Length: 255
Image (cartoon, rainbow, N blue to C red; front, side, top):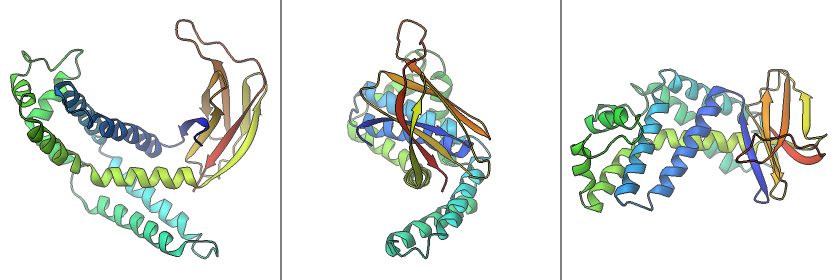
């Protein structure tokens, strides 16, 4: 996988949300290495982005259902002789526990942070370009001047509220990505199209290209078909279609 650039294309709303959350959590992890004043601002902005995604009233129920479906699908492999029984038991139990915890919990995910006046105020101001200046929010400016240990301690406490959703997101994406059928394909003159089985319950399609290919795909997926059109990378001009034949692989993720 490391020798390829991989493009993930979600096929349902839950996987789309999981991919967005995964990216935000990765950004937060990276940004925590820089807890300067500007670094702290960036972490807070990312936390607010996470809350924005989690604000959907139907997300908890949909994610719990996805975990339950994955649990049911995984049980079909329970009698496989090549199965790591201990790992299988751990994963199925984790899926069941996370699904039940989401169903039994009250309020939206991360609801406690929504009651914090500072985060609510910052959420409004960060929506504007350059928002959150000292003249907008002297309270925030004061908090940013607190010692590193104070700021980091508070942020760590806030991030703990995302532990459950982060675990669920990582587990869903790990199972979906690692239970896939991979096929080599050829895009003729930079275009590939194929029919899909609507009963296959695909959750994601992944395209892999080697790093030396000067092109990237734009993916379109419907219930019955999937197409990939490859373009030449441009910054200043409108991208044009890659006109040569090229090889790539497709992973059909349908656990």
